[in-house]
Amino acid sequence: MGGGDLENAPGTVAPKEKPSIPLGTHLGMEFVAAGLSAASVSPFISIIDKAIFSNASGREHLLPGLFSGFKTLVTSPVTFVRQPSFLIVFGTYHFTYTVANFTQTICDHNLRPWFYPKFIATSVANVSASLGKDIYFTKAFAKPGAPSRAVPLASYLLYTSRDTMTIYGSFNLPGMFSNYVQSQGLVKDPHSAETLAQLVTPLAVQFVSCPLHLTGMDLYNRPGVTVGHRLEFIRKEYLGTALARCARIFPAYGIGGVLNTHLRKVGRGYLDNAGETASSADLGGSSKYSNENFED
Image (cartoon, rainbow, N blue to C red; front, side, top):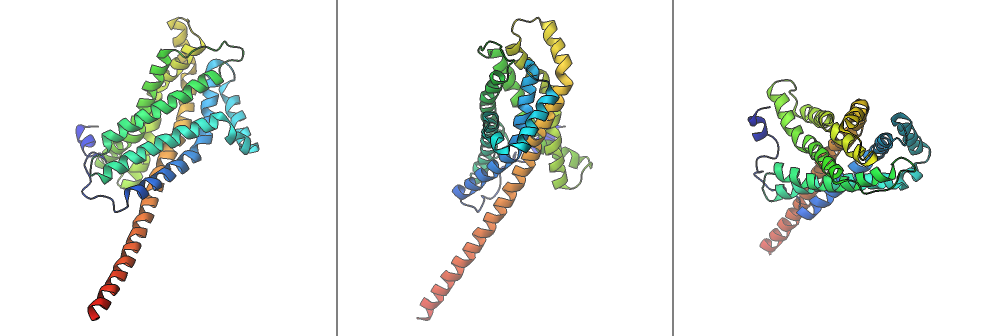
């Protein structure tokens, strides 16, 4: 993609008009949209994350771990949503979506471009929340009997790099990719192009960032092994883990991102209509009051 795609990407140009919705009301709607989006995808993400970490440590193989998680979700949903693994994942994505929504909304109300502020704010929010989540998962789903120890600094750095790549591919690249496929005539309908981009770009990034994720986990689970053994572990687990991460990213930033965007548009449309109705009522009342005074 050329530089022109970035220049024309959504959010790189300041809006010409402020939203008509009061900022406080607008932020309340954004918070609700973020919460509903996070709640819709967190069960799947928590199941997949638990299975990935358990597989990397040797606690449980990937497929049995996935089956066990979905079985608990279906047969004991109340127990499932009380699990720390689910609650931590829900908090992580509610926080991430909220920061993304708030940043864009505040920029719109201040007539500022939101592309870079949204990327920076969302990256900081997601990386910080995800680090806490990943440290919990690393320790909670280590191999039974393994001694508890501090997660190495290198794992923090690898998880941070992985999440920054995911954020960029989920919140910023979709707009660029959408513009590109439209400019090339591959997809003509803007809504279809946006949806395609929101689904494709987060998944593509996982095949690049997966080795970082595997290395971060392996540094904790197998400290002191040779580089050759670590590379062999990455080679062995790469495809299964990359596909599993696609399966978790697809709901997190694909489905969740599409749903979040849809709920924001619906909510904004509802608030715009409510504001117009209230304004019309106020104008009607004012007009009647003015006419009565004029006639008197």
